[in-house]
Image 1: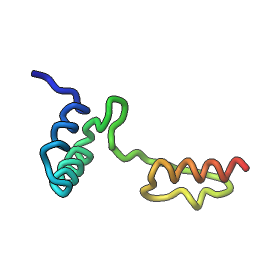
Image 2: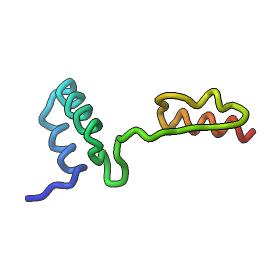
Image 3: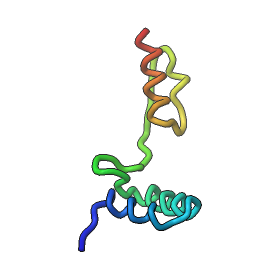
Length: 74
């Protein structure tokens, strides 16, 4: 039997405690495992120049990147 990543995660979520699932997620993320059918949880570099560039640094959530870009386009 072959499971997709989504099916495997659903099975794990149904059987593990929240703390255990958090630990599994961290292991999967560190390995760059696909976390959905379309995305990995691998960090990627992000850089910016120009006005507001100081707001882009280090590790950022993708929604934070969107907020910075939205503000820059005003």
